[in-house]
Amino acid sequence: MSVLEIIVGAVVLLISIILIVICMMQEQKPQNATAALTGASNDSFYDKNRGRTKEARLKKITFICSVVFFVLILFMDIVMPLLTK
Image (cartoon, rainbow, N blue to C red; front, top):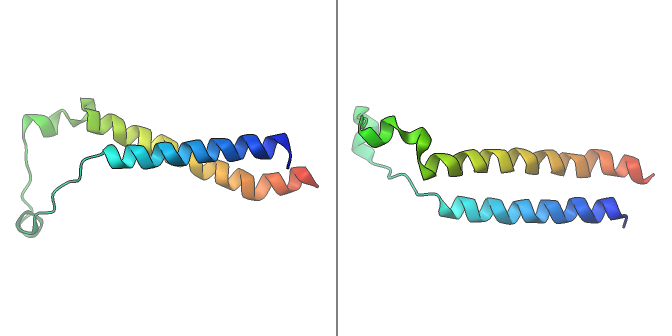
């Protein structure tokens, strides 16, 4: 194994652990069957300011980590074999 493979593998492992922890920290949204059928929505102060909450930050971090994880996996699968030849 080359040093690059070890470094990329360690980063992928670290990001996967971060993704698991962040996903576990997020709150589950209640699935109310009545609200789904009637189209009811909550227009509360919390819903209007959702972008500034802890939940919104966790969602953004989850998205960024997921994209980085996906790019690293593609890099490991496509580019790394070409570099080791």
